[in-house]
Image (cartoon, rainbow, N blue to C red):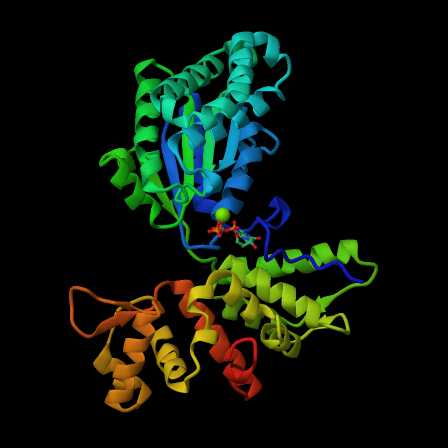
Amino acid sequence: MKYNPFQPNKIVNPAMFVGRIDELEKIESYLFQAKSGNPTHFLIEGERGIGKSSLLKYVAPLANGNFDTPDGYIFKFLVVFVDLGSAHTQLDIIRIIARELKSQIGKVNKAKEIVKSTWEFLSNWEILGVRYHKEAGSFDPEDAKDNLVEQLEAIATNAELGIDGILVMLDEADAPPVEAHLGNLMKAMTEKLSREGCDNVIFGLAGLPSLLGKLKASHESSARIFTVLRLETLDDAERIRVIDIGIGEANTKNDFATAIDGNASKLLADMSEGYPHFIQQFGYCAFEADVDNKITIEDVLSGAHNENGAIAQLGRKYFSEMYFSKINSNDYRKLLDAMSKYSDRWVSRKQLIADTRMKESTVNNALLALKQKSIIILDESRQGFYRLPTKSFAAWINAIKSVDERRGGSLTSQSEVG
Ligand SMILES: Nc1ncnc2c1ncn2[C@@H]1O[C@H](COP(=O)(O)OP(=O)(O)OP(=O)(O)O)[C@@H](O)[C@H]1O
Ligand SMILES: [Mg+2]
């Protein structure tokens, strides 16, 4: 048995967290501003698997003082970090926040006595919550919203607690339907806090790029409350660092040492195109494929290509609707290969005919079929322009191509993909 340090299915632990320097500096400055009474709310947006939750998880101990900032500063925020993945209504969102708020206050020394009425309120609320839920129709979310703001304010402004303020982080903020009106809730809460002069509560949201549109659909100006931090891929040095940290961690936990060839690291970094979930998945599978404690290019390739290897795992987890099992034809594959060169940018049908050297009618048929399966997107404003849905889908197709080429065989003939 060996300990595999890579974490393809988990929010990364802070020891293996790499990069995001710019975003962290900004968030630290927002915390500092909030502590000084000038809150900036932020919104982290990015594709699935780009590392939004991992960033929030890293921010939590930074904000509550478990870690110091790089320049040695220690914050003391009460951190309410929740996941809105299961919230369907505005009331659900409010209750999820209130429940975690109560749990976090419970951890602050003497807080139950210092903010006794808030503690009691939140406790009663939690009990009542069950009833509220059953009678959601008869319960007014406006009251719940006001109540929550009052409790946040009572905590944030109580000097005896010795906290800098409250950081409320809402992960998977794109998950609740538009009808849950997260935008409207954020706007109402931040405005009420500000009206009451409570300026040390900040909200940080994380979600897919559709989040901003959803907020706007709920309340036109709600998106303007937030400073948007867009997460992009990791750069070359950062990718290699994730791999090196992983190998280093394995070597402290296993009773043997694993080494990795420089060109194997480079291949992992290249194939991932900087997507952290790809690095973790390719790294995990290469580590598993290795049998002699020396990870080579062959281990990386077989880890990627094996049945249930990295390519199949990523396909199932992230691209299932677009998964190759739906596509049995080589023509589709050739076309997708050609499109992936353009990442998620628009490309014309003419260009694709030129690039693939396929017959015009074959390209037309393949484009139509891929569009009908929602695997590619048609430009509504221009005739004959198409693109892949996301950059990471293009990266996945590129990885398949690169493994195919290096192994000299076709992945599409494998049962897990073809
Ligand atoms: N900064 C990082 N350093 C190293 N690994 C990371 C980093 N960020 C994310 N990862 C890894 O990438 C994968 C995806 O991360 P995470 O779950 O945080 O992404 P996400 O954007 O929240 O995804 P989703 O949209 O599915 O919620 C995980 O395996 C995680 O371990
Ligand atoms: Mg996430």
